[in-house]
Length: 166
Image 1 (cartoon, rainbow, N blue to C red):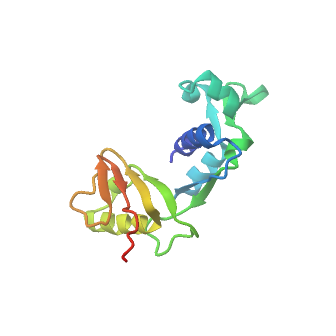
Image 2 (cartoon, one colour):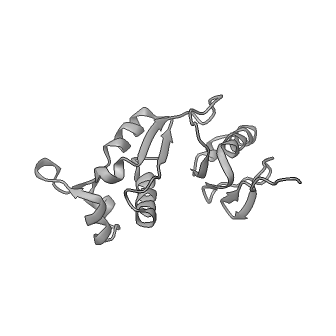
Image 3 (tube, rainbow, N blue to C red):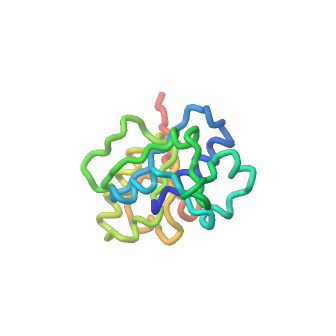
């Protein structure tokens, strides 16, 4: 997660599509409490945020003043949609009460051996809604891993919708 750029980028996309008052949330997880604390601050140096279009910058960020000059903070209206949680991807049970429509697990599996990757993909697939998507990093592949997902494109997988039998 580094410092929260990916969850907040996704939050901006969702706010643009569903509205900032929409009923959507992002659960951003990491095993590092240090990284989570930094991401929760939602403060970015102006250089890191330079690629953000000016219109989005005005809508979703506050300019720092005084000692914070040159920095930007994600506005509270957007921050309230993103929950940062400590999570070990290999823990026995995940603390989520609902399934997800989208899970991004990018550039994590490269650190695990094949059996661990298979366990992880199984756990993530369980957390997806039928019809939900799993996105992995472009340097990662699920080939050679037993799983129930259908590959749509490189790094994009679909949990098949539930079928009903009559």
